[in-house]
Length: 341
Image (cartoon, rainbow, N blue to C red; front, side):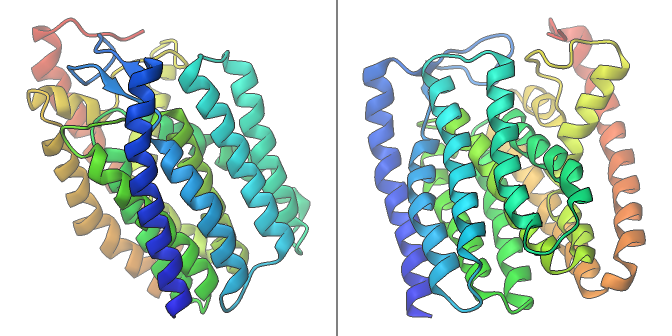
């Protein structure tokens, strides 16, 4: 237990110190996100603060997974660290100098392939590889898409990572529980700088890396019991639902779905609320605490009926998403020049 607490404190303190340094670095290098039509902030804000999260977790996650009870194979831990570092490196580069889509996406697929291949080699069928590749690439990118207002991604990461830690502990996986809790501790350290009004943004170095970790930890739990997929989907529903339905709707309407935009539900909420990011954060937190959390527990506690629970949950959640989206469209669209590239 003292060692686990040490890893959590290290993740929090290292992140806290490095993000403070990242603010100074970003100002010196001119790494500032300027306000614009497709952005939700109103003042130039430093980006790249996720580097603090990355460095802290590159130290603490492998340490936790290898040093505590129920350790994971070194091959899995090394592949996870390499994949995490690759996604972070590409994101850090993109924060300094934008990369074309194809090289960036290719590096993300390579990272997911490295980790997934080693995980499957522990005794799973290789038929799962396409599913893991798609899930990993989508997790990396959807967390990048959802990192658009102050505090939201850090808040969501704390909630999801805490849920992963609880499930890992319940499955007698102390090492995995500590690793996921370290993610929550690091995200909390970053949130202290990123809560509204944000002093720094996470940047691609952080958002993509966190997406990779949430995918990897979820896949590791799924490796222990395939039925874990259903509570895991509910746990991450706030981001999964908004990002996925927004993408599907843009494709259905013939929009350039790969172009930057402000059509996610959280972005409509923020504009409707007069740009108050904290109000949107509170609504997503309410979703997590009042709905996603309890239904995750329900599905986890009844894995034999977790699939119908998850289907019912997502059908109701999708209906609510569509209702809210239509409401905000009716109220906002006539009043503002809407970017819908």
